[in-house]
Length: 451
Image (cartoon, helix red, strand yellow):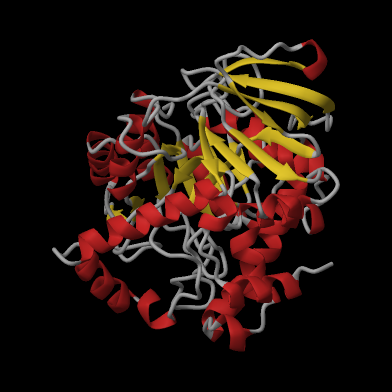
């Protein structure tokens, strides 16, 4: 899963930096040096005064700057930049029309280009590991393969391909393969894996964006048996499974089936908490929660005249969003593994706004800044199964680093404008200048979540 070098890496050192380790204890180390080797891995982490830098290594003076592990975004789509989605395109008819274009000779290059620009925006904003959960086709797989082959500098990618849904279910047909029964569910899982997918996504319940009826969001759509067929097929290949689930019953069914991550979530009870902690059907015997507050809260907090959502979408949001928020708080209090995912590409969720998810976890989810940073680094690495490769600043780990001006433990907003991003040892110079921001959208979010 690790990203291979795309060019020869010139070894270098980041010296005299304040190190925010990203652990749960908010450990901060002053005047530290991190040495990165030609293999893209961290060779040494130690106090600057006792760390000689080899003469053939470049030295970057990071005095006054903070170095931390690169961010991990565990839930993203690549087909859009985050502008409000036209409700007409979210209907079954609209999705079929968009899907027809996306899979046409003209559409495929467009989708591929959009995916690449989305991935690069994630990278330049400090995301060095990214999981996609619902692609139009296998464009994310192709990007991952180019990164791994050394043709392109990019984040470490876990790519799902299309998600798996029932006919006319959430995400279908634009970003989904339909599964009318258990046999089709297993076959489509194997189809994705045969195309190189190293993540799988299920639509266990209805969703807000494409809901056409009141109560559709959160309504269970796929049976436990269908989801078990998916989980069993994926787990046979060592691939973890995510489930879109926006109701307590939907979460219950998905966990019973053996999913590894619940996306969005709902109000939990003692039985569900125990199943998160000890899930015999999950790949590793436990499951995790990815709340995605960035995609949920603006649907209620931003005026409908601005968001453009329909009355049905608004009412469905009211049904599920409060439960998602409460579920995130319950999961934190219960000591569950809670990761960070933005649901990038959805309405008001930009590809460069991962820092906003951390900010919302603090402002609305009851997390401390240290807990949010820990969730976006070490916890996410464990959830995605890449903890031996990334998620911490440790000798032998990939040099996935983020350099910022200021201390994110004191102000998470310093993550908005990174000074330097390092992905598997590759420095991305002036990353902030490479991000094409959506100014009016950012202004709306800034005003909405100013305090």
